[in-house]
Length: 409
Image 1 (cartoon, rainbow, N blue to C red):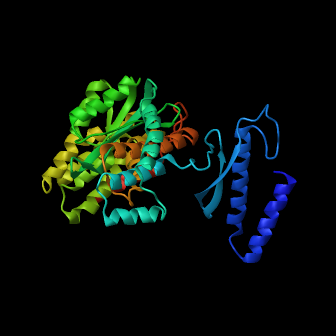
Image 2 (image 1 turned 90 degrees about the vertical axis):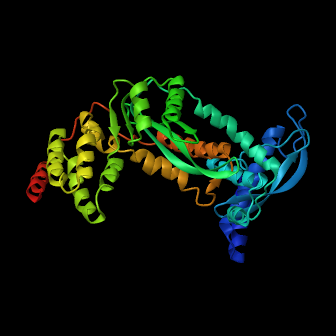
Image 3 (image 1 turned 120 degrees about the horizontal axis):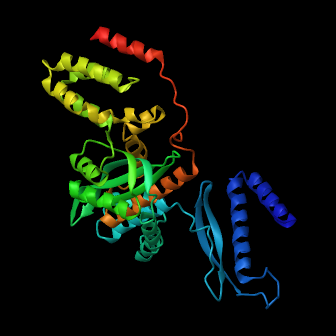
């Protein structure tokens, strides 16, 4: 920045201090305005008060007032104009994609005739000056949709070490009624330990056919094989996984299975049983885990046969993770990556707008959130330790807990 600009900023700084106002806001306003002027100079080809027709691409044409919301407050700016062509700047379009999607969704609710006082309050919370014109909606959607489609159809790697699948339910207005629709999300983990959003699809129902369509779309984009699939106990999904990835082991989420088990018990017995179940999954070996299962089966078969039968018949489905590196156990025996990270990222922004006006707006919003999350994953640290490193040794204290459990039972 030139000496004159530094002096100007210093004068603004001093004046703001004397007025006891927000001098950071004033300083930012001057800085941003200078950036806009520099951008116009670059697009025109010459600086202010410079006569050089060989380099000039256009002529200055005054200003238009423009507001820009920032973390230090709203800035009243003057947007430069160019006579021969539109002035372009990244400052006013540099919003998060997911926030654009949410804005487009709420605006579309108003335009589609589902406006209520509640929606107006939502708009007021987002921005007192929020415009709901059709042109704004078309512009925002037009920017997002091609980008989303490109991302949803990008080429996938042929192989992933782990693939986790789950559905989260969102409220969508469909054919005049508000219904709960499943959003299918699949995540892959590479052998280097990096996470990757593989795909997302919105369906009216969660069935074997819809899961098959979702997985076939992943395969059509290049996915060929995985070492382990992970999901809850949804029968249609498990059947499709066994068909599409034959000879690939499947891990049933231990959290979902524990809930299924405890539902078979009266409330007063659940806490005690939950403590015993923890010892199953904290066992250092599969053999020891199965021994504890046998003890629990004998304990509960007479008093609570439904609990004992479910435990005996399906526990093996939740112990597949023992065949994989121990350093990965905690992360591959549940669907927490989806439940606790992906689904939370989607739903935490829906406290303002809980109902999507249509399927397209729902997919648009979810895709934008997941695109941001996927970018963070690709540039951030590994989710898992890469394969091939030395395994940690089990602690003897775990064996002591197992012995205490036997004595207690």
